[in-house]
Length: 402
Picture 1 (cartoon, one colour):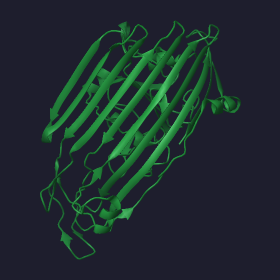
Picture 2 (picture 1 turned 90 degrees about the vertical axis):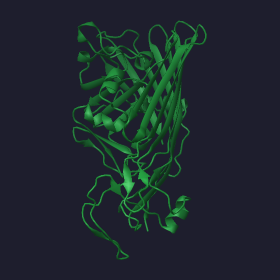
Picture 3 (picture 1 turned 60 degrees about the vertical axis):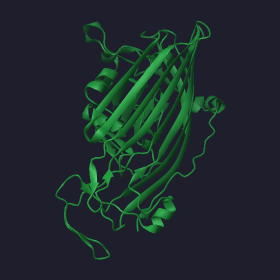
Picture 4 (picture 1 turned 135 degrees about the horizontal axis):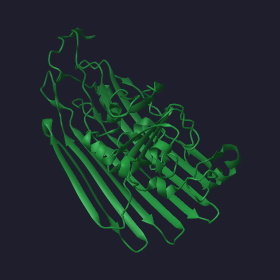
């Protein structure tokens, strides 16, 4: 019989900006020599200009990468496509000192920068490498599994980043910025086909809705790719079934105020990963399985008790059924002598995931994760109005409840 493992069944939430204001004195940070703009951080700023200058917002403002006093790697959307980086786990193939492990299957990435990070299989434990999507903290690695579509750029900062980013991220920070709405009409689609009938599609549409409101909608879908076979039945394993969408709205009611609304949804119903027998294995019932000689060969099984707990049939394959959804509002107001930035976000993630770790039909090492994770986060910043001056400053307080 498999082993049942679960965590974070129900997470408390209810963060309000009132709490942020009350905690500002204790949690605020004052930075001399830096200024910030929420709109800059959310904009699709160019990542390369004449003279090979790279523009980033790692310090919550648009500036040249060489002016950022931190070990920094920047990848823009073209870099992701060129290097075929399709999910967050692929980042380790392009970023120095970064390791991304999929704990107990591909649904839960764990991050390490310069060897500092985590290898925890529990979904409700946070990592010391902070992951931020459009300035919103994603403290649980399992919730980051599909932040990777319609991306403007990714900034990876190595070393402690606990001030500007609101959490004591001792390993570093991974800052993901999605493409912003445009005031010009535009659309695009990208299709790809790979081995084992793997199909991927991404598309977007953007443009103005009114004189003060613009929008961008992006969709992503992955299907197929089953490359493994059950040694007993020949059944295929490894198909992807991943669908995601993101809607961004930008409202500029006047010359000094900008409101960004971002909502996203993802569902992953992909197959799990099968293992390979490297040596002969004899089950508790006395059945002997010979070592696999083909890397595509695997096996699995579900006991009646485990099937009843998971509400599936005894012929079920290793699977995921994970749903993530959430939204955020970003408000920036220029008060003349200073800039006020407020961010509030809510994330909801439900995980159902089964994997078989004995790689046979003997039902001796199965794991089933069922999690419900809810997080609320908020940030309040007051910044000097002019970027790049020696007198620039930022006062910031933030909280994450989950």
